[in-house]
Length: 184
Image (cartoon, rainbow, N blue to C red; front, side, top):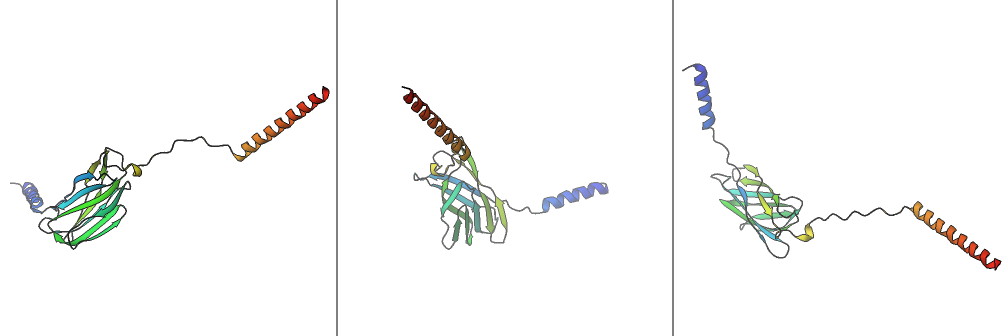
């Protein structure tokens, strides 16, 4: 076997032997409309930390999704700030979070969350779980409606010109009527 072939084979074996980092596994498992304009998302973080436990999860929703509440395991802290939720606590093998939201996305549009899963060994793994915003999930009070385009009104100069023309016309008609009365 030539030296080049042995080096290439050795390099291939070395690359295969290097452990690969686990991928973050954050998913939106279910989404349910609550009937009051809110929707509950069940988000699960599991598997991404490998043999160590999950110690935190940060979720960032797009501007058209408001995060109103979040559940977490006992002993975990929750901080919600409009479109961002930060959860942390003692390690668990699988983290399940219920997020109460108001969704203003376009119906049938895909909503992408930015997630960072934190592991007990200090590893932070980003991922982007998604879900579909169906008609039942969208809160119509949060949808943006474009106002109909209205023609601009008259400027002050145009109004002054119209009023002046009216006054001159009225004065002219009054004078005409007065002259006509005097001739009779």
